[in-house]
Image 1 (cartoon, rainbow, N blue to C red):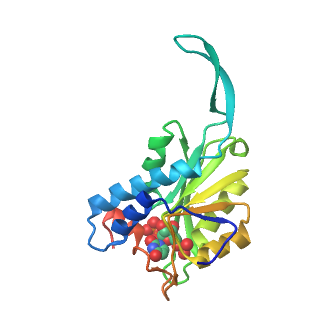
Image 2: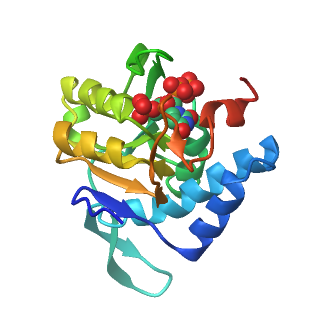
Image 3: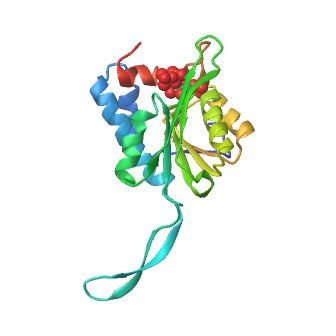
Length: 212
Ligand code: PRP
Ligand code: URA
């Protein structure tokens, strides 16, 4: 397997088992949606493991103690529309108070370049941790564009989480945004001539939303 310094493959058995079912073309939409959410939640546990804590004084029923809570502004997740929406609820189950931004992008079928149509994120971006969500990192055009838009608004601390990555996309992120760490459940073999990931799972947005 190719080694990328910007990439972590989360190989927990539960993630890998659920990903196998997700990839299967016979999996129903209902199950596909549920699995995207479940895998995202399991990945979220790992992706958030180095978020900063601060000491707080609390009173247990027995005595006063110093405990630890998340510090700073609220974590912000940013699903890339459409397919990233399927991942958002999984992370929100772990961090219910997270803020949610949205970036609307679709990939032109001919050029494979991302076309943007929506952008909304919480204020004070420079003080927040961002987690960008998109199930598929293929050419990397959409992920790189999403990060560029966040950077223009001042975002500094950004992670990118996908379910399936192609080497081409990871390499593009390394070249354009070397400080953005990429987390994936699988690093697949390659892209086909239409920019689809092989073996992949097909078109994530279509499988989530029942379009074609
Ligand atoms: C898919 C996917 C990513 C993008 C990945 O979205 O959800 O956003 O393609 O491809 P890339 O790495 O080559 O940019 P799509 O363009 O199909 O839009 P959709 O989510 O609205 O269906
Ligand atoms: N977008 C998808 O949904 N799937 C791919 O394999 C590539 C881009």
